[in-house]
Length: 85
Image (cartoon, rainbow, N blue to C red; front, top):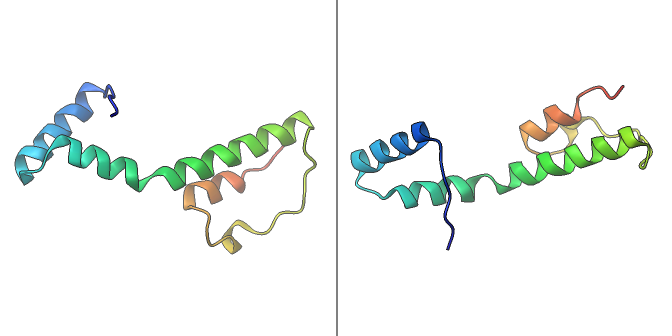
């Protein structure tokens, strides 16, 4: 069981969508959550790697081009493309 608090605007949008389609708000919340774990994991791992590099605890390697990483989401590819000072 999971209970979440959502911003009022999102709650209203979910309510309208549920009414318009005859499905529950829970159905749409579940669909949204199931759709995005890969993106969230990729982003978290990229952020951790960047922090480690900036802290000097991990050497900077010559990474592959982000476009050659087929299993990486677009948001993570964009993050990995950022220049590290």
